[in-house]
Image (cartoon, rainbow, N blue to C red; front, side, top):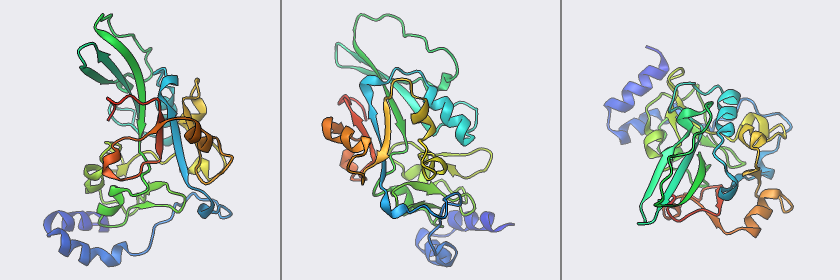
Length: 253
């Protein structure tokens, strides 16, 4: 039995408090991303993403680019980012459908329904919370937050216990079927530390996604925040998401 299997079995078998105390030596020390350039200063940045809901056309190019860039499993229902279609009906009923399960196929318009008064698309992804609950529950320190505000997963430490998946209020994590470790959006950390945009932002044909540094006074994301009425998902949870939505309907959760 290797170390990962031992830790996973211990966490599932022993009471949580005793397990955390026993595993403290294994988890001590903060993980650091292996791909960060040596001259990169994380303390100078605080990254976030803006999404203009009115500009999203549900083309799923962001989903395809993310899967290709980050080697996300091709099987349906494994996503680091996905698109939901909302339909608001006259009677106030809201229908929500994930249209990314058909990524790569031409998007078909839903059948005409005269009771639908509004249809729009909402991109979703890890919200890169300032106070991430996933970090708090990880028993071995595999999920951690970098100094520039990005939440990452150290595959070498992750034991696949799924605690972080259950703790995420946004449903943004999954267990990778190949690595058996937790996986999620990283803002394409290997790209942004090299001065590049996340893959999903780079391919968006309508510029519905805006990536930037919330510490930069002249940054495009800072201006996006200033000139729009900004909403975040599940604000009552006080996780302080750094994915900022403009023109977000009140029905979106």
